[in-house]
Amino acid sequence: MTDACCLKGNEDKMVPGFGHGTWIGKGSNALNDTPEMLHERSVRQEKRLERANELMNDDTIQKFEKAAMARSRSVDSAPLGNYTIWKNEYRRGKNFEDMLRLMQDQIIMARVYSGLAKMTNNLALHEEIETQLMKLAWEGESTDIDQQQSRVLDSIRDMGQILARAHEQLYECKLVTNKLRAMLQTAEEELENTQTYITFLTQLASKALPDAIHCLTMRLTLEYHLLPLPMRNFPRRENLENPKLYHYALFSDNVLAASVVVNSTVMNAKDPSRHVFHLVTDKLNFGAMSMWFLLNPPGDATIHVQRFEDFTWLNSSYSPVLRQLESAAMKKFYFKTARSESVESGSENLKYRYPKYMSMLNHLRFYIPRIFPKLEKILFLDDDVVVQKDLTPLWSIDLKGKVNDNFDPKFCGWAYGMNIFDLKEWKKNNITETYHFWQNLNENRTLWKLGTLPPGLITFYNLTQPLQSKWHLLGLGYDKGIDAKKIERSAVIHYNGHMKPWTEMGISKYQPYWTKYINFDHPYIFTCRLFE
Image (cartoon, rainbow, N blue to C red; front, side, top):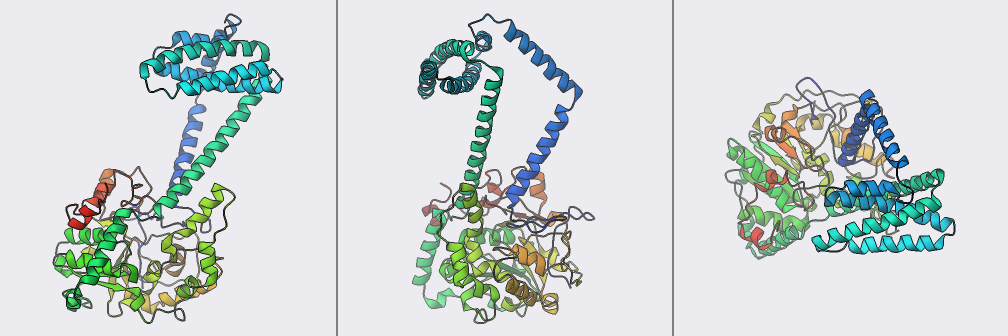
């Protein structure tokens, strides 16, 4: 009575899986965090603990104490008037990089004394320091390396003299310390705002389809509408309802991504003739998707392309999510034009403006038995996966069904990406009806905002059978530290996250696993200049 699969660390140990946008963890509710944010947060915490342990080491403490005492002696023994914190470093400098680091330190102290000079009404010194800072900024723009080195040395000397006088006139430990603390706090706030802005731009860029794929889609659509009707039919239609074959469900509006999923599956199958691909798209991309696979059939495998708008049973009276997606309230929530007062809130709002969230394609996974009523088992694949091994053993897995009415927040999370569904057990357990129940409860988006992972975790609760981790590897769309051997051992690799392989943001070392299934000499791909 099982219909989906979560992940396993090994044959005996369960590990939670990551999905698109929401994570279910021990002792917590659903959080609207992306996999990238969860991973980065974990890495930062590990670094903090590592650094804390290092600092608590007795040898490290003694090392810091000795360095501080040596530094103190060098400052105390310096001749007055030279401000020899800079003078000593200037004399010890061995290369140009040392000089640049020293100049950066001088700039920090210059800003401290500039602020103190203005605060104490020493306007002449304030103006002199600001003039020297502007000079340093101007010299940093020089493209002549030799000339720049000479100027840096002169600037260090001049700034050292100004800082020495500022030290004599303005230095007071408490004032300088407070000023440095204020500058540090400002720098931290600026860094945090910058990181938030980068996150905002990253999310924005990840949701845009590259021009090359738009070009490919438009060319294919034009060719399809010029194609005579008798030539628009796919061969081997008799295989579409044969329960003895291996059936795949793929719902996508990205023709290039869909082609990689199909090509990678077929190229790694032991007997491609026994594999059947059911591809569902929308009316906007139907022509392009059909034309691509008519021009590039998947060898001996069977493929069929449909558009979900042709499903007459799929209407707002039957499907709560379709009714909600068409509602004025949902459109107002998704397309609201009010400007955010901060980048941070804008980044938060942008998470819910992923076009997939407003596409019925994203929710078709909950209607698989209705779309394919005569099939008994089907393998669902997301369009951001690559298949690297033969997947036929998945159809022989015993999916042990069970039913439980309670929701346990400690239960194993799972990701869609790749799931084998027993459609007989699906119908027996009324999965689609359960999904409708939760969607109706979430009419006002109080349980979750948008997306399919939260309702999926609830709907399939206690009805999932774990797979060994070798079958499905997640994280190639956000985790830059995945071991290459682990990737090569995995049957399916999943680019979940913002860094999709078909975008410029894709992690470069993972892109070859995806691009190897694209024929760059294909005239349409070549003309549209993909990845140039």
